[in-house]
Image (tube, rainbow, N blue to C red):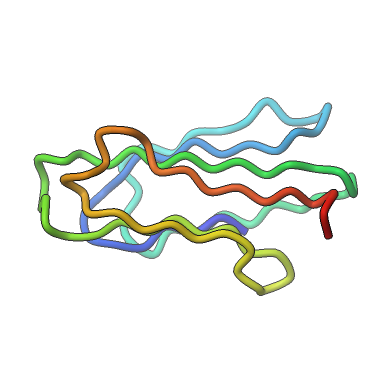
Length: 96
């Protein structure tokens, strides 16, 4: 599962390294956004990139999380004013 927390809308791009997936994008998602993905290939790499506008609430934070079976396997948090580079989370299922 992919998850975004923090104040204000963000754009999200998420994908899995699976022959059947080209990745997807969600624009202007609110805080608390989640997306569940069913993964059937054991050596999958799950990617998530969050794009947050630094001009909107620059002192607030944005967090991305990737969960596997309910457990957080990657989590990163930055202030919106520090997100000039995209915030990225990922999970390498081949290491599970």
